Length: 260
Ligand SMILES: NC(=O)c1ccc[n+]([C@@H]2O[C@H](COP(=O)([O-])OP(=O)(O)OC[C@H]3O[C@@H](n4cnc5c(N)ncnc54)[C@H](OP(=O)(O)O)[C@@H]3O)[C@@H](O)[C@H]2O)c1
Image (cartoon, rainbow, N blue to C red; front, side, top):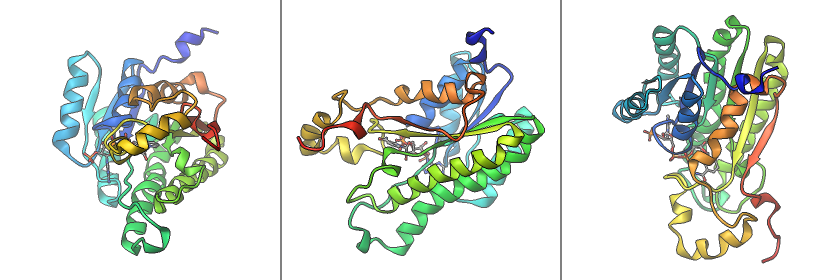
């Protein structure tokens, strides 16, 4: 068996939500480097067009299709337009997420709670359900959900975000249990602290950044590209026996010192 060839994604089509920047963009770039045709998706058409054009300028295959993942009609349009453009879907990365609330759980509004669950968890399930028959028709596929170490470990100020990310982990496990018979693999990636717009509230906080690296065994936060290799592996045939997995990439943060 040629192991290197298993990473080849030539002819495969990948949809990546939240791919206009950050971790989603880095993962989409990784998949495209290994030969996949990638659909760059986020809410704003000009933003996804800009990324797709940049990829094409590097000789990669990409198209931008805007989709607010919280909107049922836009989710359907994302799948329909992908099918019209490329004719198949082999890989789905549910990466788009929001974190509108920081504070105590009892002070969170119902609207903030609902929005967080809708975007981070419910949208991932609904979009997967739309993609499922397309993957089934191809006799297989790979779905990757982007959760977080916040879905594994409690924190005192993220409230709904942690709840949604824990839900994403069980969503992936249940889908893996149900869709294995169709050769559709479902895995979950739990990043630690990655330098992106979403985490700016943390890495812009000078006081926090004095203490936080000490708690991370690798002593630093990640850059988005450090999440891409895991996504490439899970999306590719190299991971053909890997499903229902939860993969932490956090510089060791969850194993960091309890007291420091
Ligand atoms: N950064 C970290 O430290 C960290 C740690 C653990 C897990 N994560 C997870 O990693 C994933 C990516 O986060 P990131 O840090 O890369 O964030 P980011 O740089 O802020 O990027 C978020 C992406 O999601 C898109 N987006 C936001 N709301 C959307 C919506 N309703 N519909 C469609 N697209 C939407 C944004 O584009 P538009 O604004 O143009 O729509 C953007 O492309 C998320 O699931 C996050 O929870 C991040």
